[in-house]
Image (cartoon, rainbow, N blue to C red; front, side, top):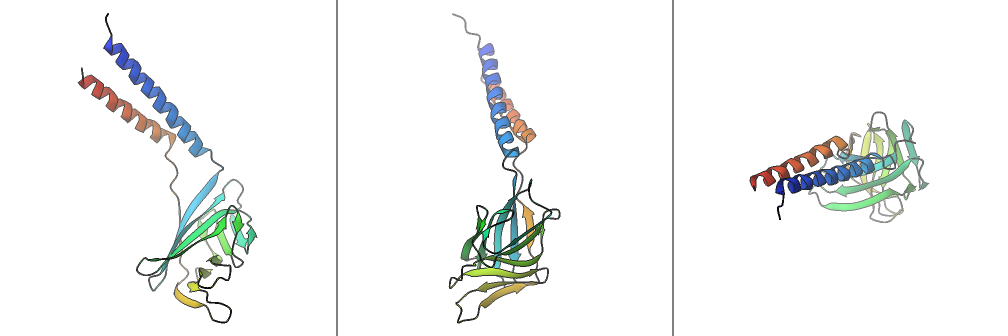
Length: 201
């Protein structure tokens, strides 16, 4: 019996090309057609070394140019918002999900975002908002002054841990790999496989 290894090798390679291409297309399609949610990160740095980092998301197909949110309950457009606070030694002070599933958990929540410029503005109050003793929150006015504070109950004043001039940075979470990139990666994998097959004969 004669076996044509060259034909078998080419069939195997074409089978791999088909499988990788199909997988790449499926991944790219799902990445490019989600519920059109866009996610952004934000970072705040206080003058004394405290910091805050977090992210928020919204549906870009329905959101207006200016997203404004206020108080607790169902949000207008935000789908999620979380924030973590760190001390000057980078120890975690606390993490809060201010908005989850389109619902704000903070009675004092204030948020204004321009979707055309990707910038926060105006009154700002995120994180703790349930009047729980010891909770942290970031509040103030973007572009004017922002304060990291800790709540100690109605009988005691809030403690300001840090502040800055109102600066807070926002950046988009990188987009998923494009279809072209995935196919290029698949092509590299197939080429590598083909070279190895050639070297073995």
